[in-house]
Every structure is written in structure tokens, then in C-alpha cells.
Amino acid sequence: MVATRVGGNPELIADGITGLLVPPRDPQALAGVLSLLLGNPELAEKLGAAARQRVAERFPIQFAARKTERLYTRLLRRVMVPRNGQQGNTDK
Image (cartoon, rainbow, N blue to C red; front, side):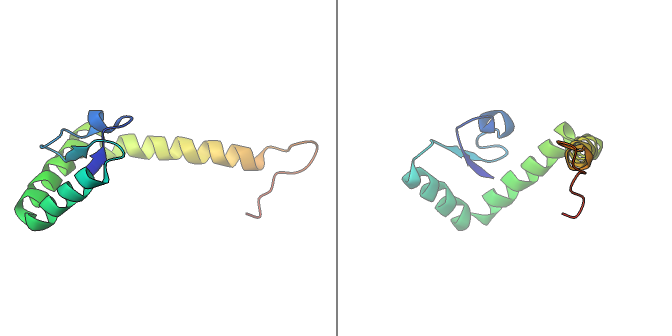
């Protein structure tokens, strides 16, 4: 995994362990780490395996399923709730 050091990325990605972080707005740094990974498939595999393990430990499938269910419920409520006396649009 390759990402920039913005937002929550540094919290999600352990630099050099589960992925590689680059400074924001630095295309040379991004190109450098992409080139590094393309030239070193063993490193890419090692980082990928560590990232998969971290996701499995921190975000079990039940967690993702609950969040997805809540999202669908909110979206359905928006579609089904009448607005201004009109029926919700269920055709889309």
C-alpha cells in the first residue's frame, strides 16, 4: 500500500511495515516508492501481507458488515421518506 501522509493515512499505514507513506504533493517521492515496489516484489508482498493482517485484526468482517448495513439503512430512509408531500423515489 502506498499513500500520502495526509488525513488518517499515517494512522492506518505503518510506514515501512504495512505500506509506504510519501509526502503530499511530491510526485518524485511517489514515483520513487512505486519504482521501489515494482523492482522489489518481495518487499511488495511483505508489505501487502502485513497490511492484510493488520486489517483483519483491526477491522473484522462483522465491523464492516455493521457499517455497511447502517449505510444502506440511511440511504433507504432518504429514498423512502416523502418530501413536500411527494412519495419517495423508489425507481432509482
